[in-house]
Image 1 (cartoon, rainbow, N blue to C red):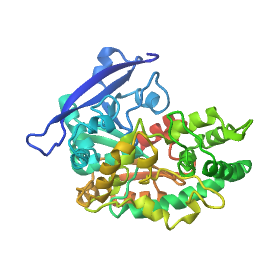
Image 2: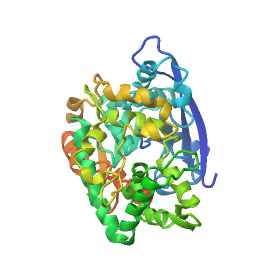
Image 3: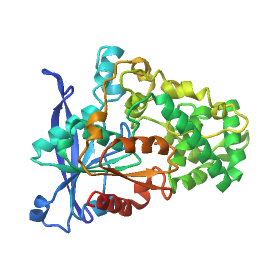
Image 4: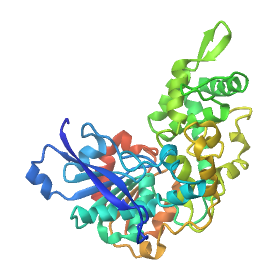
Length: 421
């Protein structure tokens, strides 16, 4: 491909790394390197493992070197991991989980798809590739996984880079969602200040959906509360403007009155469907759980923020929260409602972080903390940063959560240099 070479790697790993007779699953990874290096030179380069956001997000499919990958490929071989259950790794979705005998069996299977298992996969892969230590770069949930890596297997890491992904090391997800609702409300206000004409339009769309049945391309009905999910656009620097372009396509005139356009419904479907990422909905709240249940945290905390209700006078758009009704309205998730409830009630999740190990960490760590991040709260991130020894923070208001999509090259170079001071 243009400027790069890629190599596919497949690994058999235990479903349960702690189980002596565990069945195995496959984990896929793709290696990228720059054609500026000869084959012999590439063989001598150090490795960088990239951990994607999520949970449930597959690795980046690069067709050319750009952004942070362009910067990284100057001196690293990049291993792009399809975290277990995603991409070309053994899938975990309604079709494959349906082969298990019960919802309880499905829930037990999915307990092995959190950060601790992802880290165990990475360590096994590192050893099989004969790598001494590698640089780990985690974006968003990949940063959460990096903190788990630093807790459980720091001996495998040369340095760690984290962008928008300093997870709270303790506490319940309720605290996370209270911070998230507050940040998302601020971001709504910022958006409507940029595009005041969209203030009335958003509420008009929601009220239209209350009275008129509109259907997405997959045949499922679009409801007002599902429409609110387009607030995911608010988490980006330039994506926020993409929300305006989406909304301007909303209505068309017909002989039967205003209707939502096919172009608008197609674009909304791409945002609100979890068909390509079911693990996000199934495991999202569990990524904060250590020894307690989430009990549908976002749904409960929503009761403290009535301004986010779909029937509010002026409708607000939401962020990354996951609600139980997702498993009623999204066809890809309906078969998984029972297992989602079991996971929400699970109160014996194992630990994800070792604060004693992190407090004595010797691995150089550099983390970008985005001041107005609506997905990973700035204040909670700084609390975590203060707990991890040898971690240096770069706090900035120049970027939002998807900063590496905006200027990944500069962000990567800055963080890398911070670990070399």
